[in-house]
Image (cartoon, rainbow, N blue to C red; front, side, top):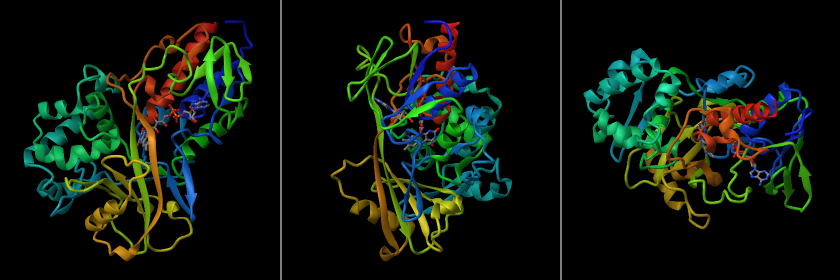
Length: 417
Ligand SMILES: Cc1cc2nc3c(=O)[nH]c(=O)nc-3n(C[C@H](O)[C@H](O)[C@H](O)COP(=O)(O)OP(=O)(O)OC[C@H]3O[C@@H](n4cnc5c(N)ncnc54)[C@H](O)[C@@H]3O)c2cc1C
């Protein structure tokens, strides 16, 4: 690489690219950030529909993530938090479980709930305490590839609590119902939920990348420009124009851009998320709703404006509902069955519901069979001048995406020094 001032191109204006830019700026570099879309955010986007805020896919901000603490001003994001627990809907029962470690007043109600047997709840409490005391690294070590479902069974949880709680809750987070995702992710996310809060920024999930972008002073954004490939120090755009740089950070999936990398990523998990407005208010006490009903298409649903009133815009009364399905739908598949299932779980009258929007997200989370918490910055280096960032480098989370951005920037700076 040449001596400073370095010319650096970052491909991808998601949180990984934005964090990488911040560290390059701190080193006196003014990167060019190229993105195929019209604005920053990548997978963290929020649309406005009839005044409602609709996140592209159901997402939460975990306040305990170390990278969230490091880079985000939660006060400025005006976050609102979920209660630590869930409403569970089986075919015949509807009950609530609130984490008694967080809300001790709920201990008796939670102990008696049919979430699992009493021993399950004792184990749940013990696991929560154990993981809270463990370091983030220890959550990963030794569990990088063991499937979550095997881990839960080894601990001795009954099938009842696995089906009623772990499968819908973590299936919704991992975007896969088999719970094949490595137990490291389960342990880490469980710790994050137990030690902090799940939250929504008042401005929608896209407020996160917008805040990161607003912190940048010297970066140049180029939107609506798709990169076709990257070769050595050259970036070729879809229109055939070329740019060259001393260093290039790929803050997006690299397999389609760099020759020889295709087929190296393990693929992606998809999801379908639907939004409805209910003219009748649905009261769920800021809890996420988990569905354990094998006949239902629905995995979880949430009354978003109970958690974050801003999501409802100017609309008074009624509820904004986000529904996530167990299995993503093809673009030609209808949603009549989903609506029927939702009316059954929510016990709302059918004339209360107005459909707002549907999101089919094909590349929602990377499939990674061996996850990592972090890596040495030098491991981000792919070639002499190309460095890799993005959640697929470590694990599928906002936390990992931000960390990967820093590691790629540090890797590039180390290589240049
Ligand atoms: C539905 C859903 C729910 C989620 N829930 C959670 C959650 O609750 N908690 C959590 O921690 N994480 C969650 N995640 C994961 C989290 O959103 C991602 O890990 C994170 O946003 C990834 O950021 P990134 O910068 O690595 O990638 P991206 O956000 O994907 O950014 C990559 C950018 O690169 C651009 N790009 C790609 N190819 C090109 C090209 N050829 N030319 C130019 N630009 C290109 C894209 O347009 C994009 O802007 C969820 C994700 C989804 C989709």
